[in-house]
Length: 103
Image (cartoon, rainbow, N blue to C red; front, side, top):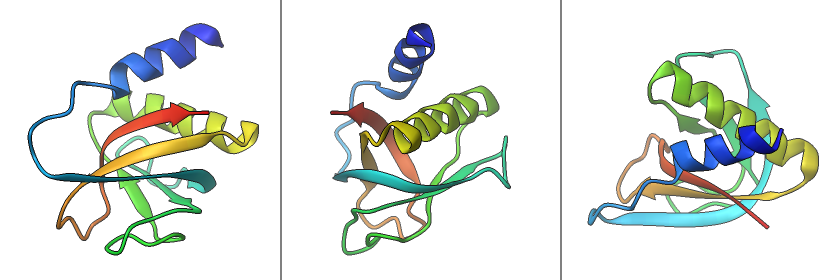
């Protein structure tokens, strides 16, 4: 399980680009697996003006990355840990660019 966490963090924690991003940190409240492996949809108890708390958030990259992020979100949900999500400013689709598990 520890290896899974480390792998997920490494895959999901690239150096942030110079683009304008907003971030918010909160707890995952729902993870939906309906659209896997193409994308992961989930909700958090935190948000931003464009993507408020309770809005459906998305993660959509390549299949293996989606599976790792799904695993990380499920881990955060069941362990009651927080997640920090980064979204590009102006992205009204609420699609995450980077994601971190935090204390």
